[in-house]
Length: 200
Image 1 (cartoon, rainbow, N blue to C red):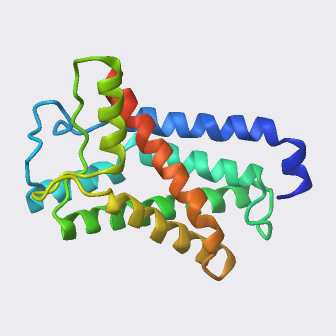
Image 2: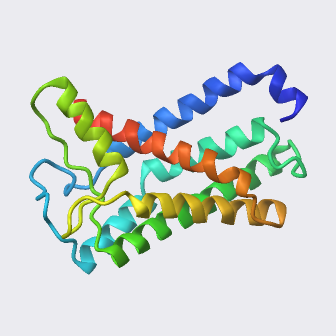
Image 3: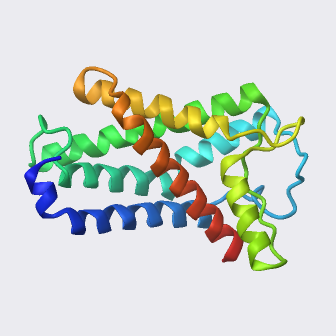
């Protein structure tokens, strides 16, 4: 962590928080029509539906906000340090973040298809606050399959692969130190997005 980041840590932490909330909120407000209470808890996505959902996730406000926000935060933090702080450096970081988002989305959907997982969120929509909160949290860390609700491996795998890929093209080698922060940010965005969907 650079001296500049330590000096401006609080403003940049607030910026990161705002980016996470914006990404989650835009994700929640731009969900495809299948993400409604009418979606069956045992529904199986067809190949066409998977491609349609993948296209929606790539061409979406969430993708744009995540790429611009994460790239801007990286620019403020001067990461990677080898890239300059001019407009060109900011653009390179935004492009890197867009690439990371694309790898994450592609890996997530690929693993989802391989595992027969449906990770669309279906709001509970009614009931006690605690039950709805638990429903949103469980829906963030698990997926629906024909065999039940296993851990959300598509999300975890997407975060892992995209984090290592981004560190590889930014620094020349995979940086395993980024794995935990990358997974944490992905989970926070997923959880906040589901909470917005559940209580909006």
